[in-house]
Image (cartoon, rainbow, N blue to C red; front, side, top):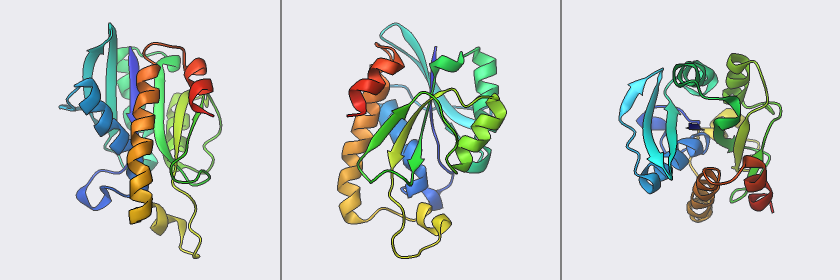
Length: 186
């Protein structure tokens, strides 16, 4: 059983913000894999489906970013999902818009949602897909920037990157994460 988690903040005011790119990828995956996000438990909104003989859970934690681990851990425990079957998708200030980076482990890199997941799982060793959002260049505070919306130019790149993330997630249903990582990190 695979668990694919997209990080973001619940609520209309956060829709389409840089910090919610993980939610957007989960929405796209839900469409592509025909898995409705209809269950609300474990402090999250999720759906379960069967894809190519593999059970897949798509999760959007509804805890707010800083507490994402409070949703991920209980769901993993309830469905007895192994650490190697977890993929977390989130925004990354250190990558340019339009780029993704797959990793099997690593620190939180200052990302509070990842900090929370690491704290609740007790490990940094889980699969992740980092989605580039750039850093602010005009002196804007980081909090305001990540909670802001993408520019029109960035929006065009965003559609492509959401598709690319979705393709990477789908590829992990057929191949090991390390192989998918090598294919998509070029």
